Length: 143
Image (cartoon, rainbow, N blue to C red; front, side):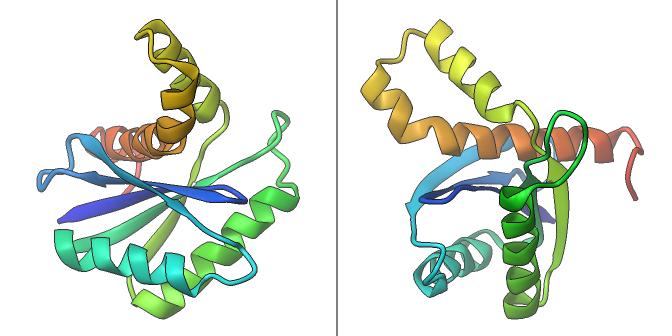
């Protein structure tokens, strides 16, 4: 049973998938999208769901540092609701505070150029979101 991880931004969606055992997350792509016209992005996500036989979608939930959910967080919740409705799959929200910053630090420490970082940062953030979810599930944190 594989899971798909999504880092949903205003212009891009980072996509990652788990291995069949639910141990590790690997980046797939960064989808360019317009959040006012979501169909092409949802169709691309549905492609990955079918391609990898996904049973769970993990959507990053951006929260403020105090835990409050702002406008961007609500937009991610709304997108998760659309995915749940359109795919019929289990869709869970995963706290994504600081994942993009951590992905950026990881890429900088790997000496990835600024231009290349821009192209992969959202995919890396999706990997981190999904890996956090997988790690918590493995240790029995969520059932």
